[in-house]
Image (cartoon, rainbow, N blue to C red; front, side, top):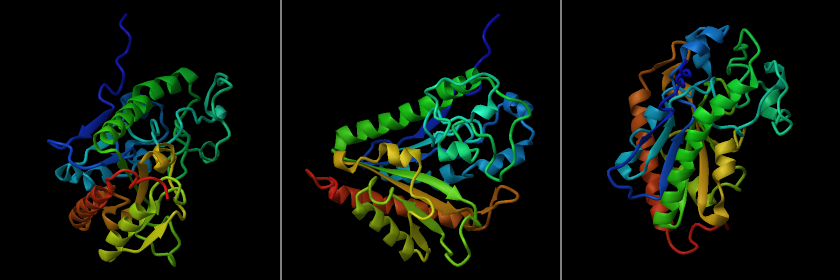
Length: 293
């Protein structure tokens, strides 16, 4: 008997420019929409409810990045199946019928919230699975999804750094339209791990561009940056990571999970944002120019 084929023969896709001319890489870890049949069969939820965890259409919003010489890496697998914006082994032991190895991180805040590498809940708080899983299932998802995503992302960052001497990672995400109190009224939240993951010139530049478009912007509250931003952002090594959270109310019908009338305009503006950050990063490429301040 032949072993079953993995559910994601192509776990990632990379949109590349014809020639990389910018020290910038964009990533979308949560916009995958391929739901394996085995996942749907094991879930208490239908496909539409599972999609509540997606950063829906964020990959499309930033798909103009390659036109400005900057590659974009996207996950094809959905966040509810395997979350690439987590450590590889953030797992809830209550989800598994066998005992987890002692090196698994079972106490992180993400695990406590039900949103580990293999999530217990969708973002709306509903339990995903009908049954408990085997640790081997988590191992397979990490090997087949998490690792290829991070190998691809690390490869892009390394090659960009070698070419230019520095690299800026734009870590692209979205947030529910009601994620923040109405009084804050933020359309975007920029996260640079409170200044530790990105040169403040880049963060300030992104904020200035977005405010110039008329948007309300917060920094690091309540989203300061997840695993991707914190893991890769190393300003002392001229590797800078900025997380961007976009309110879904700007571009989609959250109940229908469909683009709204504002989608095309926002996509154009996100291309402008990437262009602005490409220009800004380009002016800083010089010995020590992107070093931590």
